[in-house]
Image (cartoon, rainbow, N blue to C red; front, side, top):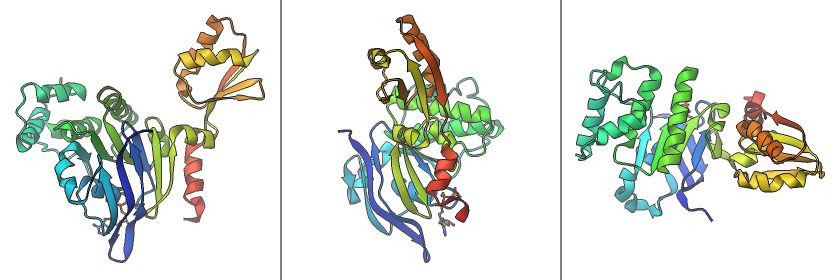
Amino acid sequence: MSELLLETRELTKAYGRQRAVDRVSVHIQKGAIYGLIGRNGAGKTTFLKMISGLAKPDSGALALFGYQGQELSKIRQRVGCLIGGPGLYPYLSAEDNLNLKCMFMGIHKKGYVAELLSMMGLYEARRKKAGKFSLGMKQRLGIALALVGQPDLLVLDEPINGLDPQGIAEVRETLIKLNEDHRITMIISSHILEELSKISTHYGIIDHGCLLQEISREELMKQCGERIEIAAEAPERMLPFLDSMGFHDYQMIDGEKLYIYERLEDAPLVNQMLVQHGIFVKSVSVTRGDLENYFIRMTGGGKQ
Ligand code: ATP
């Protein structure tokens, strides 16, 4: 079984009479990119603040790396967060913004800031003032700041909000790289399921402060009908090749077709692989699921 890095039990916080977060229980595995999805005002920021130690829950419990209650203060530096904007000093260079954070955190390792800048693709721009950065670069610098101290968990509140497509792609690639190369677990909020779907391995859907569903990427893809469909003669012959390509989540349909519920972008590669191994492929197609529609259905859609 996978190890849980973060678990909440009925976490609750109210502002006045309104429960911004209402008995939310999430389960986040080590290595996951957990997309917290909900429309504006759903309670995402409040929830992220509580797990980052920036807001105090009214009730419920939180376990981080197996630590709970008072013990949480011991492991706070293992959590990096970007909540409510990147918090940059606009008149300082990217490098000096990072130097300052390192100083606050007592980190004096030589080459550390340069390494962070390179990781975020900002090394060339290190001497430029942060205020002169594009929005995408500012967000990446914000993520670099959150990474100071080498956290194991990154908490990012709407990191792609307001970015143009280029900026979104840059931030997305950066996050995937951090997760894959550095094994950093992440929780990322957004109100756009489509965007999160390109990176998240798991989702929590939140609405009016309540968690409606926790679902894995594969399960979500299935529920939305998203898949690669392959028709071939003797489809069972495809299975060893799919295994060798690292696919796990596929299904034979009526002995004629095969549905793959992951890595839709690899459909051409699958085709090439099968043909190369002498399998007669009749057709390969990709069916895109309607994620936004699914989200709207889950959250009651037009009623609100
Ligand atoms: P958004 O994407 O708009 O930030 P969100 O999903 O992050 O939305 P929250 O910011 O957590 O939602 O807000 C949840 C509810 O709590 C909202 O109704 C909001 O008005 C209310 N709220 C949040 N912070 C406060 C506060 N400091 N004082 C009073 N009400 C608050």
